View 1 (spheres, rainbow, N blue to C red):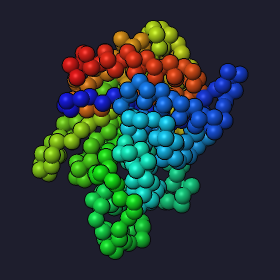
View 2 (cartoon, helix red, strand yellow; view 1 turned 60 degrees about the vertical axis):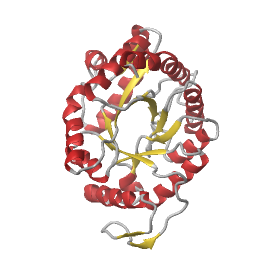
View 3 (cartoon, rainbow, N blue to C red; view 1 turned 180 degrees about the vertical axis):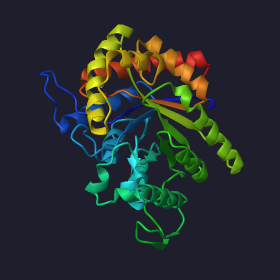
Length: 344
């Protein structure tokens, strides 16, 4: 376990409702997101992750630009994605954008690469979903080569080849910290170890302890490949309010509406309150008072030996003001309580 546990936040820039009960514009949601990140920086939160999506219910399709705006208004918080859908992007352009973000933020850029849980970007950018696995494998390979900041020679089936090619600008103080986001595939865990990338587990349902085999697999794979120990992080949804009852009541409706909307697309049944309460009590939802959320985070950190916990604090139409209060409680109360419990 890392000596200093990192505690961060994630958001997908969910389209929120305004005071009139109507959805805000995507533009206003993005501006609100920047304000949320500024508050997180002021409170000493370690990381802010911004997701990439290409659909009407999320506002952010170009997270690097939002992160650059955040960089200009913050001083210390680390800035990254949650996740960058590398399969439907060009690794060279991704590297260029993040090396630029790293420059303007004075070394605070990180990237979490993954395949994403949505597939809208594939038809949007002209990629074949039948090449889902091949696209990611080839792009991870190329991106890993680019991170070495040496002339790259590469060829594959899904992109034009490169021959002794330099890419600019270089990262000022390499390496650019790069994680691989994993939702539950053993192959993805082994891939992260193969390329020497830290592992970020996305746990959105069920108890975190069920991911212990993936943690063990990652550490075993690193040892067998004779690679150094690497950090493991975890991303899960959550919400903090002054009391447990308030947190559950405020989070329930926006989360249910979000969950049911995605469920209709994927064939899931509607979420009932009993299922929600079970996820809060025993599963992947970190919802409650500061004391309750801190205790649950600390328990997860101990169970899995993770080095970073990122809480996705946005959920559907949950109001900006409530998210700001959640961030305040997370920074002022949850983080100190977690570190006190863990002695970190």
